[in-house]
Length: 491
Image (tube, rainbow, N blue to C red; front, side, top):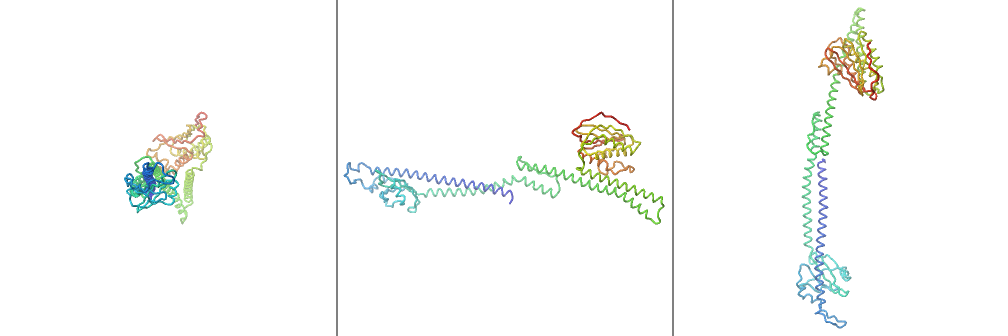
């Protein structure tokens, strides 16, 4: 069952129950109200009739002034039927006069009709001077009967019955109940239709979200968005959240696609870099197996060549392992590291690679929060890269720019072409086409990965013909400020 149908049924059920309770309450109030009004009219009419009969009974002209003891000269109650006033009673109510035994003694118009029903319980209550209400069927009519005793000198002398048919009231109540049922059923059906439409309008954005999700799943197009125009309610916030999630998914999908593309390129580049030395080694081995064997001098050259290619493969594998460890990130330590001793050691090692080159140090005392080996590897990569791609002096600078320590390695080489600058941190990218330059294009990518693994960053600036400057920023320990003066050292 759909949410739309469930909401519509719930709304309709609530409305139907409300209408049912309202109809029951209205019917009850109407029934009780008409019954009370009917009782009030019967009471008033019965009281008037009783007073009229009592006046007849006590008519001074009908009684002698001093009746003898033991004799009752009062007129017989049956004569009441002949009285003009009694005969002129409107027949809106059915009126009967009974004696104390419940026997009919008078009716308006001297109608030859039976007394109204009176139960033995009611007769006993009347004899006890109580008013008695009774509902009964009389001559195929449902009647509400008001029975009132008329008491003279603490004696019930007669009983007045006033009744009115309940047919009109019952017909009215039946009409009311029928009207309430028909109106309630019609209102419920109309409410179901309106609720269905309103639920559909309220859930339409959710339907669009579902369609968008299905389209994205089928087309892998994360650029789609839910088109929602409406109030900032729960559904509006859902559409906004879904669109924000799509933005993040689009960015994540783009990054995954780029990562997969880089991975494919990386595997292709690694395969290419490994294929060359392996092909060379295989060819050299084939030469060594020739018959007759090659001269000893040529065999020696082949072995030297094979050894060089093997070392080249070892360097490549080592670089790849280092890059993999740098990509892992969490393996890097987070401890205080004094920068000056590490950079001084790196500069000393770099001078061993080219004793003719000048490396100028402007190293400031500072402490970073990082990994000593990672810092040393970054510095070695930058200096090695500068030695390979320049012919002049190299300058190593450090500066404290809280919360960063800034390490700069500047050379005076030919620089990097502007179109090549955005790709210098791509793996296996080598800016020049000079095959004499050694390396695999992994140095700067490794330095970038290590820098970011230390919560820092790296950037490069270059001008053609003037050289390049690589700038690394690493986090200081507790935003440490500079300690000591900057002292240049020329070695």
